[in-house]
Image 1: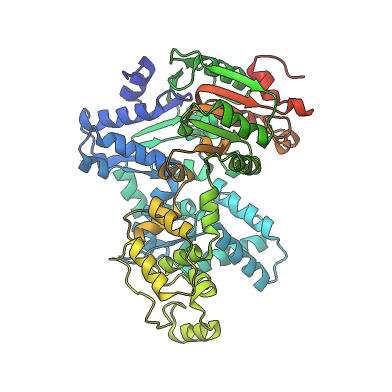
Image 2: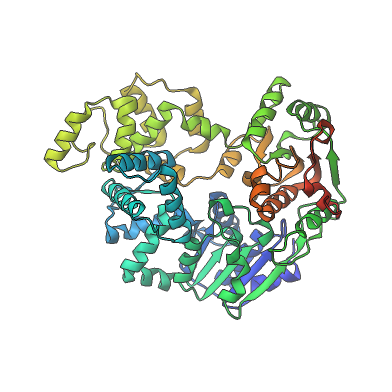
Length: 569
């Protein structure tokens, strides 16, 4: 496909700050790749000076894979492309020793799970008899991680300080802390900041509407010669996890003289779907104005159906979608609860479905998987006392009093304080499969499920232990969808569906208090909820079917009326 005039403008612009407003299906990835290609091949820019910040590993991998078809693979490998968290983890592994981490060869900084973070915070609150609740502490911690806002409550300050100290003792960090720790590194180590400022002259930011204040600070402090941000204020749907839509809205104010380029031709959705999506999103006032134009030449189907019960949806899939390839059919819902009920109904109709997020969630609850992850963490980071507690609870079964006593006597971690033949000390030559089979032989009391084995083989093939941990700790659910056989109908939430597309999309439970949610109606945050509906609409290439429960005396979603350019009453 030849670039449009707007795409060519974005590819060739030499402005120091560029914001590309990229509508759904407007070719933003192709534009970004073409710009990088021009910089390297025509402008002779050193690939090492290019940093691409994304929100999913899938997006980063796609950029590199598509570049590799046009540019020498060695040069592509020199580009830093990854999620904000993956890039910050890489920086921390290189410079973390400047702020107290141990990141030498053969020893990894561990990223703990949200569950472990909660357990640790509970323990600190209890041990020091603080009056602060877990919720107040986690809320303050999240505000700090996404907005950089320090807690005002002195108790919470002490709790978080102790929390950070304990993590540092374990050579560990939690997921949300990663960016904060790199910000701290740049503040305390001017040499590290200067190193990356000198290196990264060109910074690309994907999905700019999803950035939070700390992510914004990261690219701003690096002061690149050229900043190229791609996003769409109409697709800002992550405010609930700290994203700040005002960052994209204020781009021109924050970057005087910035060039704003709009990509408004939609090469994904049929014309009828584009028209309804435009009608819907025009009801938002907090947005950068644009008008998506259908460029496929297809009229498409937009239809509102009157029954959204799980049984009816399953029956509809059997009867009307049987002629479509399962990989090109998706059922999108506002919540996992709705999808669970539909999955159950589909199973009764013997329909093959993949509920995105379910496999990972179930595997993570499997004790043998939890032990495996803790086991690998100890191999790569012997100081990880948090992982030791998990491993000991499930498989090791050591006397903790003896372990603690010996560790205190020798001034080492709990894992370093024990000597057991069946625990491997070196991981470097071990693939995931080898470590996994050794673990099974060493700990026969663990019941290893076939589901865990299959999950590892499908999602993490050919990796060594160290790579597996980094891959797992920084993964995203879109790769789960990519790595599973695409011969099933996809069941997915609207949030998880962002960045994906299908020929046929069914949006279910499209009723008031469901979509928009009752919480959005109470809080008055309808604009983000409307953006979420817009994202769901624009996942469909040819056929968009909306199921409301009007026939069951429910009130249809106001978004149906708005998408038909009618006033909601």
